[in-house]
Structures are given as C-alpha cells and as structure tokens.
Amino acid sequence: MAKRSRRSSGDDLALKLLDNSTIHKAEYHGPRSSSEGAITTPHQRKALEAFSDKYRRSLSNKCIPQRTAYIISELEKAGYKTLEETDGISITEFLKDDLGEFHYPPGTKFYLTFQDDVVIAANIGKKSMQEGVQFGFAHTDSPYLLGTGRFMQRDGLVYMATEPFGGIRPETWTDRQLSLFFKGTRKGRNGRRERVSFSIGDNPGDPSFTIPRECFHLEDEDEELMNDQLKVLLGNTPYKGNFSDHTKAVLLETMRVFNEKYGLRERDFKLGQTHIFPSEEARFTGQDGSMISGFGQDDWACAAAMLEGFVETKNPTYTSVLQLHPGEEVGDNGRGTTGAGFLGEIFTPALGQMQGNDLGEHYEGLLASQSLWADVIEVRHDFSPEFHDENDSAFLGAGPILIRQNGDEANYSGWRSSPDTLSYIDSFMEANNIPYQVATMGHSEERIPGASAEIHQAVFADGVDLAIPIAGMHSMNETVSAADVFLFSKAAKAYFSIKNRKKHMPIDPKS
Image 1 (tube, rainbow, N blue to C red):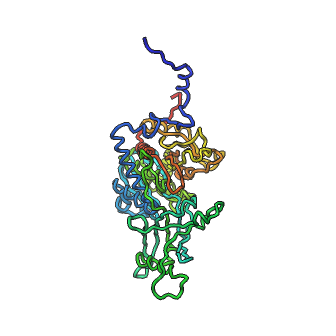
Image 2: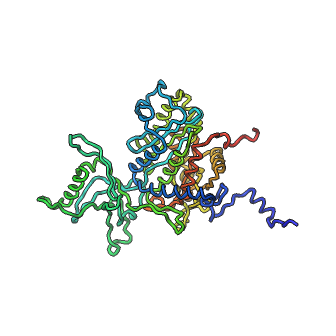
C-alpha cells in the first residue's frame, strides 16, 4: 500500500503559487538554494577554485590605471587586438570610415582605449548589427583618496593633502598602511614633458605611507573626523646639505628623493594624479574560505567577472560590446564615460557602417539591442539590519542579484526594467543552471539612485541590472562570496553567448 503524503491541499497550492522565501532565506529562481549549492561536480569545484584565486589576485590592481592595464592584458590573452593591429587603422580612421572601406567579418575581436582609462572591446557576431548588439557595462573605479599635490611641512613631518574620490568613511583611512600610485608627466632631458607612472607600497620591501590620527587618550570622543584632516605622511628626514630655510628642510629632502628616483619636482605632483589606497592584500575569508575580503570590490567584482565572461565567449551570434570605464563613483561624468555618449553616438555607428549599415539601420539595431549593467549592492547582515527591507534584501552567497528598479524613494532617478526583459533574464539564467535572487538595496527611504539609467539610455537599448552581493560597501575591506562572483561570470558568458533571443522572450498567449 502506497504511503500517503502528509501535505495538505493548502501545502500543494502554496508550492504551486508562492515563492519559497522568508526573511532568513533569499528568493531563489534557480535549481539550487545557494551559489555553493550550484557547484555540484568536481569539474565545477575546480573551476570555482581557479577562478576565485585568479580574481583574488586581480584585486592587487587597486587604482584605475592598474586595472586598465589588467583588462588589456586579459583581452590580449584572449586574442583581442588594438584597431591598429586589427586593420592597420587609427581610432580616428575607424570613426571616419563613412565609405565602408574596412569590413570586419564575424569573429573579429578588437579593443580601444581612451586616456588609459576607458576600455571598449568588440566581438563581431554572425548576425548583422541591425538585429541588435549585446552590450555589457561595469565601472572600474572605487572610492579612494586623491592626492592634491599640495605638500606641507609641520612639526618636522611632511604631508600631502588629499581629497576623497567618491564616498568614503574618513576614520577608516587613518593609522593603516597605504600605497601610492602616481601618473603624470615630468620634464625630460630634451626639455619636453614626458609621461611617468610608478607605485610605492605595493611590492615586498617597499616603504608604505600612513595618515596618523590623534591617540585614543587625547582625542575628543564626539569629534567627527573631517576629510580635510586626511593628510598622508611622506617623510621625516631633513636635508643634510647646506640649506637656509629650516622650515622646509624635510620637504626638500622628500622632494630630493622623488626627483632622484622618478625625476619629479613639486609642481609635477600638482599637474599629475596621485592615488592613495590601502596596501593590504585581498584574502580568502571565513573558516571555509568561501568569501574574499579586500579593497575596491565595488565595482571590480563585477568588472572582473564580466570581463571573464566576455573573453570566454567564442563566435557569438550577436555582436558583443563590453565597456569598462571609471567615473561612476563621482557621477559618471567625463570624456569617454557613458554620460559623454561616445558608445551610442560615435563608436557603434562607425562599427555598423563597417558592416554596411547606414545610420537609420544603426539606430534600428540599437533599439533591438540589449544592455546589461553590473554593479554591486549591499547585503543584509547583522551589523545594521534595520536599514534593509527584510522581505526585499540581497544576501551573500545567494547568487547574482536581478534588480527590478534602482531609483530612490518613489522610484525617482532610477531604471525600471520591463517585465519581458526580466522574464528573459530569468529564462536564460534557468537554462544555464545559474541561481539568482531578486532584491534591492535598503529600505525605500534609504535608497539612492543607481547609475544604470544613464547607461542604458546612452545606447537606447532594452536594459537590465545584474549585481553581485557585497558586505561593507565603500569600506577599506569589502567582502563577497567567491561563488557569487564565479556564477556572475557564468551569467555574463551566457548573456554574451546567447544564440536565440526569441527562445527566452515571453510570447503572446494567442501565439
């Protein structure tokens, strides 16, 4: 005799109609209940471990120039070439190709850069661009301290003043080991200015820098640390030769060393960029080593994972275009960023022209395109759960996050994806066995608008936001689940590799 089920009819109906979610468990739409749960075979486990270690090591690239160099290196390893190497033409010639003199067949892979900051890569697909492009975006900047180039000597110590780049907590930057990266110009031997860049504090044996704070015993407990108090300590040794101005003896010796090693003068620091960031190395975290903690994972987690998925895409059906750019932390303004309209108004028309499309067909193609914006969002954890909606929060280790809308209170200034687009993402994530969660960051009264509205509008595409969960966003030591980042890279690969969009789009009931 068959054993009767103990489930009631109400249980059966709940299984059919209700999502299996509580305040303790994220809302999953994949076949597994967690990112780790989706890793079911030895091959997948090995792939996760290899990816996680590669990603952890990539976090040693902490400022924009270092990250740009890493991105270019990964693209070139995957067979991407510069425009000059691809067709022997410059960026200017590429953008002026109004006669269609150059033609890029399917499988052509190339990239271009702007000001050593913005990287745009393209993988030409089998279908015409008139049938749409798969766009992917992530930002490469993280909140850090930007040196102003203003030096001062006080109490026998030399400092450089700094200012925040993006949102920081000033108190977290004091009394810790810091590194310095400089990018600028100097006067060369022939009198002309030449480019120079270097880092100090990244390598074993390098000196580090610090921002000393008043000791615990003397500091006013109620006094709030201000940004203008963040001055980086550079030196303490006075110049040993004859020098009449003792008030600048330590400053002179500090600049003498910079000049001897790098050919710099004080003015060069005012004209260049000095990046200050923590020296600590990213590490696996937790007894099980399932998490990764380190500086700058907002938004390097998304940028690195999307880059991995992009370069793993082979012979795409639709042309894939990836843009990794800085500037999101300070409003996404500046030359080459999405706010400047370069991608939708200049780059893609030139690319379409090389496939024989006129301007009208180009815009038709953009309207048929899809746009994926990737940024991290804070998860709900025990430090301050009251800032999060317990029924609509993201959770660490629960997979990438599909975001319905990212506006602030009353949905102002955000982007809302259409139900068809969200359903499309759900379909191809399920087809590729990738668990994910649907969530937003913070209570509706606490939210701030995301950057994706400008991103999607810049290319006129059907856009969606996919995020990586993170704990401690904008801190010196942010934490992610290694499996979440790994699965995001798989989602990115699935997105760029899509073969038949119609297969995943909802249909009219009458069809």
